[in-house]
Length: 220
Image (cartoon, rainbow, N blue to C red; front, top):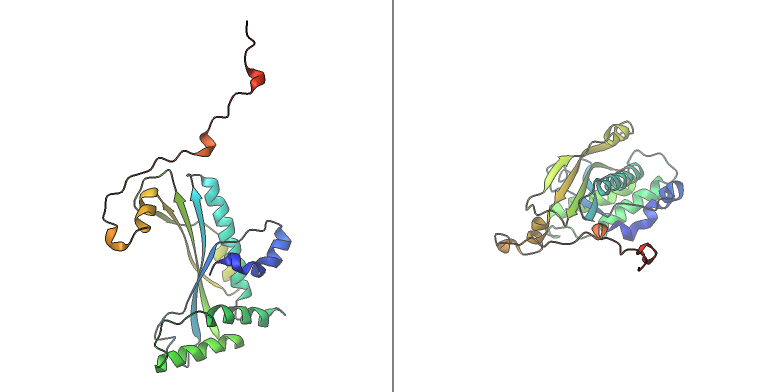
């Protein structure tokens, strides 16, 4: 889901913080697991919030990305907490249901398994589900020629903050990807063993402004 299409989900936060920022994407998955195929169990939903940056290597980009990622995780995990007692709870249950029901299920719709999952999705409207949350930052650096992402776990206290509210936030991971990796991801898998060349792209921030005419020396 592109979260730019769901700005209303963050309207209250934007009013409070005035920053008008949000993460880029949300991935909602319903694993085809034993638990989810058991009619007696609650629906197990996995949600990942994703923030992407592209540019030249700069720690400030990562700081901003983490702020946006944490905002998305905090806002949506609280709103979609099945145990939320807010007067807006039914509204948010409906928003989660709509986000899932209008997406295709990668299952044969003639099977019993399909019927079980479909019925469990209807159960979202009654709060009969569990959610596991994760977050990812993808930084695409144009001035790096690496062909494999540099990855690490993001240092954050958000997991503890949300755990106190009964919310399950798993790992938050940063992936810094160089230009060679970007090039490989833009071609079909069977072509990714080809030889790629690094393209030197000038950083606009390194450009030297032309001298001010007033600073020119006077002619003799």
